[in-house]
Image 1 (cartoon, rainbow, N blue to C red):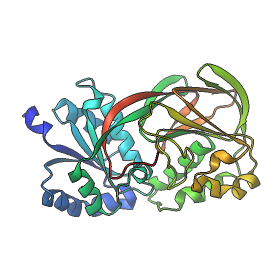
Image 2 (cartoon, rainbow, N blue to C red):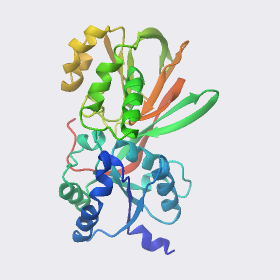
Image 3 (cartoon, rainbow, N blue to C red):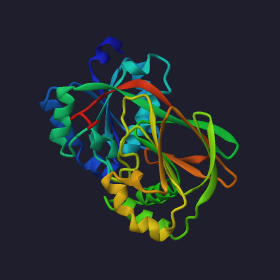
Length: 317
């Protein structure tokens, strides 16, 4: 294989199951649009979870330096983890672009990447590029410590429960734009707050925790703004800690999750940091970019200017 030739090509990784099967149904149209715009590509489909990670890693070994993720936030997360699990070249030599096909599409929302395929491909053709930070989380699955990278937002506690329920329904083919909100409301019935030790830049505190979000990005759950002021290139993670809110109070304040004013609530704390550790006597479960992970103790960190991304519009600073 001519690796120099692959440097000029985009590897397209497509999740056929994304968006309730839109990835498969719409692929011929997407491929035709890429050809019309004279964007040279090589194509890989995924057939199972984590296969996008394998495709991205192998492609970089074979000389590719540009990857288009066709799918939702989960597919993009797998691509990012493929980039960061290879040792062939520095990660900031890799460029990632997105054609959104999922149900949430929260990362692309921040960068003005259109849901209309023609618009998303026009963004790739225009090739506006920036360096993007990447977050990571170390966590436990029983006694085994693992690591996961994320480009957008990770969460602990209630957030992870909602994501887990949502992913189970997606696996059964039940997926739409309102599924996250439905599971959020349904999860309120059984979820309880937990006392956790939170350590930010070496400063420890003990708090009753409902949910914790850690973000490079601003949107999650199909448009919620739980880290509303996050910047993808400031070298810092935005941290939102929702403390001892009750069920009725959460429902009453749902609009704050969508309008970007969540940090104004007296029971919500916001921080910016390069490091966060959370431990809990009872396990708190974690998620990253909508992918369910393991549990506490966890540690979050950030890699500044870690990867190149293609964007549509500048974010508001």
